Image 1: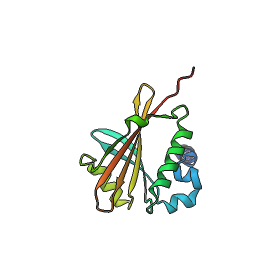
Image 2 (image 1 turned 180 degrees about the horizontal axis):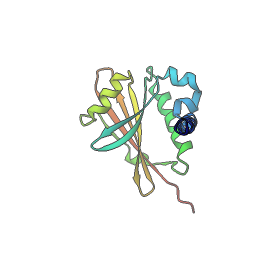
Image 3 (image 1 turned 90 degrees about the vertical axis):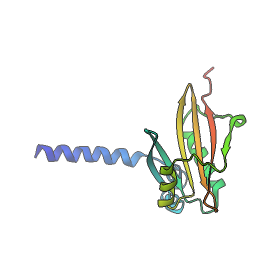
Amino acid sequence: MKKIVLLFIYGLIGLNLFAQRTTPALDWGGQNSVSYWNEHEVVINIGGNRYTYLMYNSRDDRTQVTAFVFDWFRRHNQGYSRIDYSNVRTLYPNEGLSENVKTTMTQRNCDISFTFIDIGDGVKQLVINFRSNDGRYYTTMYYFYMLDAQ
């Protein structure tokens, strides 16, 4: 009986933690946006490191999807609001994109994916992968810097 009660309590705690989690589409437009953009949150192993990817079917409106992910990143990463536009990198085609990312995007019918990487020293990187109509992938990387608290 004691095990059942403990299992029930841990289940409620887990459900509560899951219910409080927010994603860009959920935060931006609610559950309808999650369904409309076909949002998926996926953890992918690349070179022994685990990265959380947010994946979407942009419905040919990549500008809007990118805009709400940028907005979400800024609101949920307080202080990381300075973008270094002089160091934006784009790889097209990105021949080095992980097969795990490509396969997962295809399986989920998504043409755009995002991941945030904490580089350290007050720097986070936003990596955006796009699948073009010809099946090639391209990647754009943005660097966000922590504003000094002066």
